[in-house]
Every structure is written in C-alpha cells, then in structure tokens.
Amino acid sequence: MDTNKLAALKALPYVINPVCGLCKHGKFPNDDWGSCEATKYDHLKHSDATRDISIHKYGSCPNFEEEPKRVGMLARFQEFFESPDKLWQEVAEAWKRTGKQFDKVNNRLDTFIAELNQVGKK
Image 1: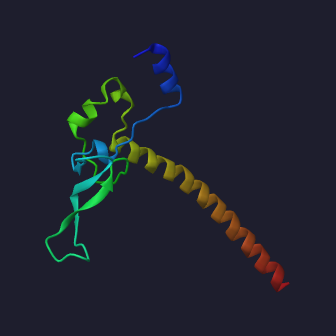
Image 2: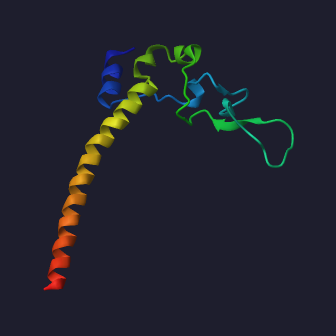
Image 3: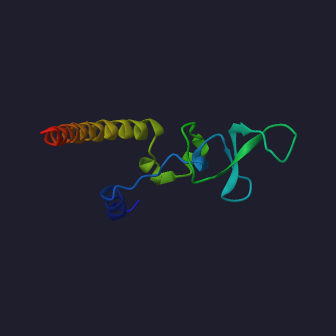
C-alpha cells in the first residue's frame, strides 16, 4: 500500500468494523441482502419451519464470528479491521468515563434540588 495512503488512513483513524458481511453466520447469495444462520425466527405469515433472519451485510450484532476467508479478502486493509473484543472494550471504557461524568452531574443536581427544597421551606 502507498505509504502516504497508509498514513492518511491511520490519521483518520480509519476502521473496518465487524459487520455481517465478514461474519461466518452471514449468507449473501446475490447482493447486499442475505440471511443470518445464527438467528432464527417464526414468520407470522407462514406456518413452516423457523427461518434465518434477513440481514444487510453492513449490519452488525453481538454474535459476530469472523469468517477468515472474508476477512482475508480485505488484503492490505486487514490491519484496519477492528475485532469485536477490542470494540466492546472501547465501549466499556467510554461508558466508565462518561458514567463517572454522569454521576458528578447527578450529584450536583441532587445538591441543587436539595437547596431549592430548603429555600421553599424557609
């Protein structure tokens, strides 16, 4: 890959997310729409057996399991593929940071409300 292109992608930072199109459960015979073998449901209009749920290849869910051949097709872009474990770890860390901020805001609001209640009693 061109070194300038690589630098530009890393500077963004560019990522390829774990989507259904890269998952071993996703089946896409014709185009962007397919089905997921991991999730079944009973269709209300039909009384036959359960069906694989319809999905889009750019969707995602927590049941992602990498399909090595599909991820391999990313070729030189594989380094930008984000594993679900890393993504969930980042989400958890972000929640911890924002959760602490929300706690501070809630504590300030509780104090403010308590002070307002005291003013009303005087």
